[in-house]
Length: 235
Length: 235
DNA sequence: AAGTGGTCTAGACCACGTC
DNA sequence: ACGTGGTCTAGACCACTTG
Image 1 (cartoon, chains in turn yellow, red, blue, purple):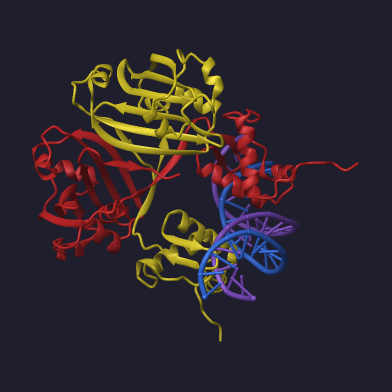
Image 2: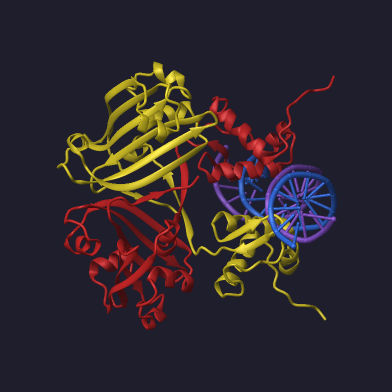
């Protein structure tokens, strides 16, 4: 009497099977799944294989895992997507355009109180404030308003940023550990409108980014794009 | 003569060390890295450990890996971020608001040619066109304009969408394999302005989403948010 | 043809957090 | 305290692709 049991020998197969069971409500949201050891036996594979499948599902937000507490189907019916944090130069080249960078303004400042709270800074530190424009085929593509924390990146004081954009410079000089990115829409104020060659009040796409290293906040930047700009995820 | 060699026994340590070497330009962009076997020996750990570290780095876009060709430091100095594809109900509850859903309009249509090309549809299929509003504490929070492909989701024809939002219904009924999300900013037209209670021309944040299953495009949706809305990544 | 990453296994030990 | 996931190991075979 040979038990005929389907075998899921690869982590992809295991993952697909788990997803299937979730889909058909074999396992519904909130339900506690069997432990890895048990699933491995069910599926006829090693625990490591189940683990890999589960780890990816957890990574995608489909299940929640906690030691001792086990694995549950995620309650929040949500999915995750990813996108590349874009570098203007790369972005423009990908569009097939000619990239040009222009520094508007660079000054060393003591941060304003509001900036201090935003950057989580002590009041007595210094920052570099940079404003710049990025062109695509000589049309303004992005207006950049940036502060760099000199406590964390002191050698930024020696960089003029006249020939290289701060994004690019920072990326090669100060690799970051963590970043938070925010997207929003806003109306162009006078300054931005004039730099981006728009009417005042035109809808602009804004991305804000804050990056940290072990030592603290590296930089905060607000980037404004004229209408027509689209940001797309992959996957 | 005991060789004193640092040992990197965990995949996190290995990953950190590789990142460090990339940072200090031991390995610069485009460079071919040693094979896993060699690194494993260097690091004093199993190949699987190096593999795990490398896999994550590849996943984060820091290195590119190809069989036989080996692993290279990525040329594109870019990083990846992730965000949750939000469900209005979840989003509003997370903000601590009271969620309310309102169907504006639901009709079965033959898709227009422009929609056909957008949805990659044949001309003779049918779609459901839905427009709806999502409220947060009785303030309009999101205007939804959606098309559902009846070839892929025929049973959507039986759903009135009067009491449940299409995002929610689709998420539980038709799990998707893939999604493409686009963000942009635009000026509110008359329709959107009136539904979102804005002045015509106000800047709105738009996210568009297209989702696929094995059988083809499930749905295309355009969501409009009034000024003030922000979308934030985690990690 | 050969070298690289991709994956699986069986076993082991450990860390964590719930019970 | 103890069961769960987290991770490492050593070895093996395979798939892909490039030289």
